[in-house]
Image (cartoon, rainbow, N blue to C red; front, top):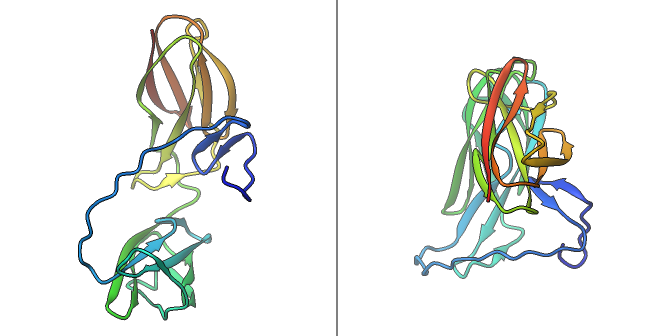
Length: 209
């Protein structure tokens, strides 16, 4: 992790952290668009009835530098679905009823909007998706898979028990973390990994070369 930040072994924010190891990513920089700054809403796009999420407005000037302290105004198109509390650069949304609402943040001439959906935290699992759905490994490689559980309207469900089925002759299980599975390729071959929850199942194909 960057200097000053701590990260423990395991999954954090959908990234698998291995202590002592490093990796790098490529960044593509586009050409300047000539726009006079930008406002971006950051935060979850989904909340369950009775639960809360936080949204933040980040402002950037025409050079791409962060701007702090600017006045931000928020609008909620459907207050019967979510209650919005707070002001300034951050607000809190609390789910009131199943549905969707548009959240708009403005600062001067800058504006951004997102759609927040509200689901039922107790809704049954309607589908299970394993990501990635297919991958190719070499013997000795390790990787992680994630099971995404959704209700009938597509909202992601959490705090559900996920069962995994793995062909141990091709891959071995290094660990499970909630709806994550970490595997290591041990022999050449092709296998199907299955994730199941509440009678629904999703699969991923793993090829070991």
